Image (cartoon, rainbow, N blue to C red; front, side, top):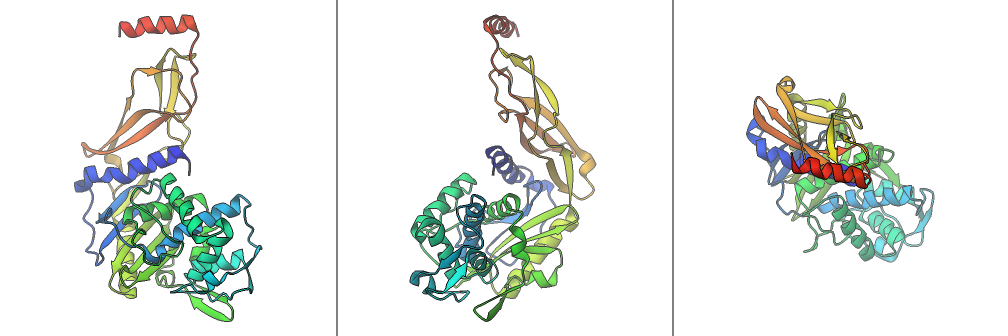
Length: 376
């Protein structure tokens, strides 16, 4: 994910805390921690204990998959590549896809076994194929977590089996799930598969919402005795997509029911408004000491804002630039803040960036602008 997109996501995902009273109340959710995220806007629509450290269990495999998809895109591995599973992978505890040591299995089969069957053996086999060992792969997971801005997450393995130094939060898991959907759309459909058969054993996805709600098309379940029943789910209705995270529910049925409650709340209670198109200027800001006197300001991607249903017309926007803007300015550099109000009250603050670069002016131009700055 591009750094500027991460900057925007960070600003959006944290902003609702400043205006939580403006949001409709969420339904009661029976879980230790939970969060509902609007995928397009990146806004948190409802949350409980979003930063509480939790054991992610098999939700860990979202990161294992993210790195696997990246390795495929970079041609480090191939879907048809044959893998000979190690004894370490074969001996994996917990859920399995039932690979056998020395028996060939392809990367594509391992991905399906990890995503649909939540196979710990498949996860370890992929980790060893990509990084040489699960330990080295865990290091890759942590580096990627830092790059994605998952500030309260640490991985010790590729499976999610309990470990004192293996943890995450509802907010980080929502951001990770969003990154999988956004960065690897070609592989995301794997999360909608309802069953997978390997080694003459058919196993169904444990995500019950795939059967009960046709708008749900992913993502991942998790369970250990200490973590409880966990589910990250995503649904798309029309042009809107929501991501729900439910952690520490009391049963498999309860995690599905609470996730459904959150998704319904988000779709029924909120609207998503596209305020600005990506790469289109929203203003031209004055520049000093530059080869040009102004710079086009805007957003690198379409800017969506999620508001309580029926109140989109009450949004007002005001651009505050970081004056004085001094050249050189790089394309993508933050040069201002878009301040949004809803019903006259502060709602969100979003970073505005330069849509073009402005090189520094020559000696005469710089001298003239220095005088202009003195008399501002």
